[in-house]
Image 1: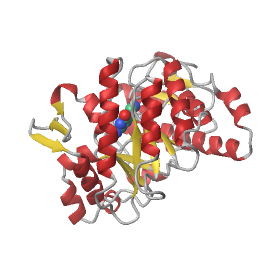
Image 2: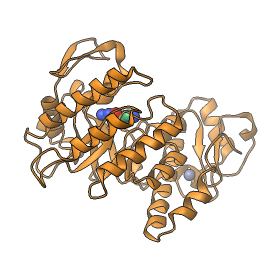
Image 3: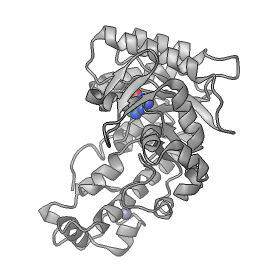
Image 4: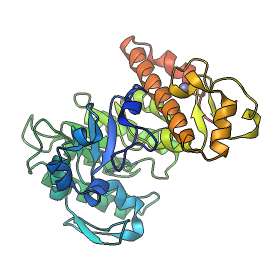
Length: 344
Ligand code: PRF
Ligand code: ZN
């Protein structure tokens, strides 16, 4: 899922995003609650209609903002007391309110409010945040959802195997049989821990959560991470990586990864990727894209974001095909090193 935090992917229209082959977007309840307001969005016809996006939307709850706005928030049992990054105004985000916001937005998948910590964190803090996230998850199952809207619980527990395992177990058994969560986010990872810990905790979470319901590794976005964690049982991912890197000139191609803003591309008349059919690759060469970036032309972000999203949609499609054809291991082996670092 590309990230449209405030309801838009920077530089692209929804039609432009659809042209990349993207099938689902992530948006953020906390940001949309502040601006333009969730009730306003409901009154105006809902997020899909306003965004002119008729495919699925997943909304994150704002739990991640607990970690990323560290100096702007206070967490208590009731919920999160956050200050707006816009004007410093105070807001209380409770688990119940997070569900209500997402109902107003009308997203297809809503996430519970959780407490995500930056790592490393003291073990007792991790344990306390996981326990609280679980109590919040329980409170989230009660309020009314939008018709047809799915609700995902979120596993916390940092890199503490026992805490995370217990947390996932408890989450799976919440709610009456058949009426619990529709899927699960694996949260609290990719927060500064070592790659080996991410893998271990992802695998452990996947095992406890089981295969019946979708499992979503929150915040994963490097191609190698997506392939690897798919191998560990992950079904969904979200990240700002494809679009954020694109704006800095970094693109993924069928052969590797390159930074087209660098000098070697100034006179390169090849497309970004011979095998890509995106807007940028169809009409422009690397030299011109290099120029647009250097000249700070806004179309550069548009073209390179379209390219990266096309690349990611293609990568996910090939990954699904490999899994369906039972040749994931070959796919993993062929691709595990391809996008690791700055290449050609
Ligand atoms: N919780 C929520 N959103 C998230 C995370 C989390 O733990 C992460 C962790 N990498 C990304 N986005 N609600
Ligand atoms: Zn392209």
